[in-house]
Every structure is written in structure tokens, then in C-alpha cells.
Length: 151
Length: 417
Figure 1 (cartoon, rainbow over the protein chains, first blue to last red):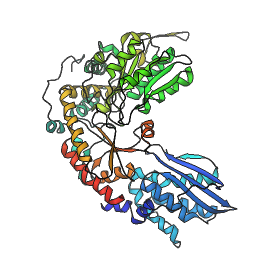
Figure 2 (cartoon, one colour; figure 1 turned 120 degrees about the vertical axis):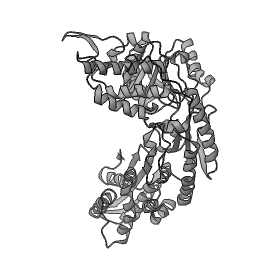
Figure 3 (cartoon, each protein chain N blue to C red; figure 1 turned 180 degrees about the vertical axis):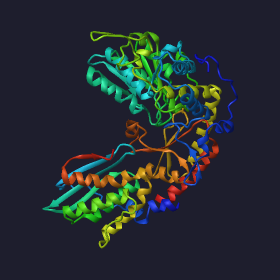
């Protein structure tokens, strides 16, 4: 169970059981959906921008614990941040789940919390699960209404 | 080696322990635990006989086939054509020329769709499939529907994942021009009564294609008894190498079908004005094929022919019954697919837990299963589930393999429950 607990850290299991910001957002300024056709993970991310700032962000979807916890913690972390900040966090997260030794920048609790996903890189088949919501978020910010796939 | 593969292997009584010793990979350790391989509907492991044949081929026989006058080429050609003869005999074809060698079952189904069905279809015609089909028996039909104006029509399944012949018959109409059905559902394990389906279709003059990817190694298959017009199957699901497979087709259909790929080895004469085709089956085998893969496929068939496949099927049925009972011990676990006639497939879901997470936990215990949609998204949609976890048996599996999967399934509940 040891490497399983590396993957499924308590904070991830907590967000899986009690996802935050899991709701539709009728007033969203953009929405994008991600789908992993191999395992059936689905997530739709809603964003509401206020100028350059992500005023509100939410998600709906179904999938494995990793994909849903990642979506939940992503929304928690990114709400209220600027596009530039979001890009920095998203890039750091992508490195975290794919590169050995990578870690999240220090000094911000919500960003540091994402470090819980570092165990994912030991499970190459699960990287797509962790990245799905982040790809959907980027699509929502770039191309409103777009659908992305992790395949 | 006998060039025509005429010598039948000596038949032995099926015994799982001695069968296991033929598969070196079963000695492998996964995350420090002995490998328990329960993903056989996905692909099967390879016995020594196949591994040694591949090694032997590349060491002593490797050359291109049908093309050269040197001895190695003659050896390679004899091995390749010998494998075709073994495969033909294994499924009961009338003659060796009724076996077209392909890249695999998907390639076989696409060949049947493009070369056989496409020229026969007009706008408004229907291609009849079932709700159980693998994507490889859906998408090739959609591709030709797009260019011919024909429509794909689907026979629904009931809650158990079965379909009755009466229901099937209702969907055979004057518009039905082709029937293409799976023999065994890869996602649920349902065994379809293909012989009766063929009778119903043939009564109306409709040809039938059977997707035999999941059946060829798990039950006795006799294409003449089934009566189907085509039967598609894959080497790698029959303990042979990946990248090779076959399409059985009745000779009269193969003779009239145009090739769908052009190239070397499939022609009789070529000029810039016109080319003529090689005889069946070579006109469908353009380019240098996966020669070693086909030779290995022949070795896999030799391996299977050592056993009475009915004994293998009985062994796998015992595993299905035992596995069904043991999975019932896990709280919140529900088996998807409970047809009366099932092959060795156990698809299941657990309340509130995604199959992907189940797969990861089992893998840590050395137990390899498949999780996901199994290339059968319509089946998942039918049950309103995103995916399933799937245990599927091969002839080397034992009750102990099932026992090994039970503690990690309890761990899944502890972790996510």
C-alpha cells in the first residue's frame, strides 16, 4: 500500500470525496470540456473572467479519484489569480506530474498543496488523469467552448 | 517443418499447471509480487513454442516470401504458407486459400467492409450490428456508410447484456444487406448464437460477418458449422504475436472481391494501363507482410491444437463461475453482463469508485486487469457507466489467480470507500 499512499495522498482522497467548486456555472464567460477516451474520464471547466482575473471557476465531471481531485484542487487554487499567474501554476503542475525532481513553487499554501500530485509521475498511465482538468482550463481560457482530449 | 503444416500436433489432455509452465512471463514479478495476468481479452501471453518459433525464424529462415529463388526465401515462404494452412485447419475452412492473412482482427473487419460490403451497398441499405460490438466492428461500417449512403442499424441488448434471436430477427428487414456481429463480447463476455443468427440472415439471402477476436482461442470454432461468410480474428488474442491476424472468407466471395490495397505480391501483371490481380488469397496481401508474425501465429495454433479446446473452455468456465462467486463477496461491487451464455470475462463496477483507481490498486498487488471502456463505448452508455474494471481469463489462469485479486479489491474499498 505504500506507493499507493504516495499516489493517493490524504488531501487527494479528501478532494475526491468532497470535491470543491463542483457545479455548473450558468453565468460562465467560457467553458471547455476534456475527455480521456481510454478510461472515460470527463471534466468540464467553467470560467468567469473579470478583466485579467479569474473571478470564478468551477467544474463538473466524472472520473477517477486523481482526475476529480485534480479538478477540485485546481479550482481552489486558481480562483482570483491573473492569467499570468495561472499560466505559471499550470506549467509548474505539468512539470510536477511528468518530471523527476520537479516541485511546486513555495510561498503560497494553495500552490504548495498541489505538491500532493507528485506521486503521479511514478504512474505514467495516470498522468493524463491529473492533467485533464488543467488542459480543459487552458482551453476555456484560450478558446471558449472548445473541447480538448488528453489522447 | 512441414511446408503445408499437415502434421497435427500430438493431442494432450489439458492440464493448467503444465500449460502454465509453457509461459515464461508468468515467472515475472510486478511491483515485487508474482504476476497475476487477468487481461487476456486485451492480449494474451505467448508460450515458449511461439517464442522459439520466432527466434528460429529470424535465425534460420528469414527472407522475403514469394519473391526469390534462393533457399532462405523458399524456407520463409514455406513457413508463411504453412502457417496459413494451420490457421485454415484450426477454424475448419474448406481450403487454405480461404484464409487472408492480415495485420489483425481490425484489419480483417476493415477488409471485409471495404472489399466485400462497400460495392454491394446503396443509399438506404442497412448494415446490421449489435449493441455489443467493439469499436472495430462499428467504425469500419460507419466509414463505408458515409461513402455509400447506407445506414448502420443496431440490435439492442437487454439488461443482462444478451440479445434474443426473436429480437434479432425483428431487425432483419428488406433493407438489411450485411450483418456483422461479434461472436463473444469483449466488454461483457456474452456469447452470441452466431450459428442461428447466420441461419436467420441466410434465409433472407443476407451475408454474415463474424468478429471472432474473443472466441477463436476460447471455444471450439468451426466456420463451416457456423456457416458465416466471413470470420475475423487476431493472433495476439490466441497466444500468438501481435500484428498478425486473419480473415476467413468463403471462396466465392473472395474470388469476386476487389483488392483494397495495391502493391507488390498482390498482382499478376502490371503495366501503366492496367494491372491484374494475383489469385485468392494473395490479391489481398499487398506488400511484404508480417512474415515472422504469421509464422508465430501458426506456432500459436499448433500450441492450441495440442489441446481439446472444449477442455480449455470448460476450465475457463469454471474460472468464470468461481470468479463470479468470489466477486460477490466484495461489498458494493456489481458485475456488468450476466448473460446466460458467457465466456471468461468479468466486467464490474464498484459504488462511487472509478475503475481506473481499481486498476491501479490491483496492479500494485501484481494483478493485471483492464479498466476503461474496452473499445466498446456504446456498451458503457447502455448501462450509464463511464467505464468498467474487467477480469478476463486465459487458459493459464487458476482459481488462485482469482483469489489473488480479492484482497486488493477489499483494499480498494478501504482506500476510497
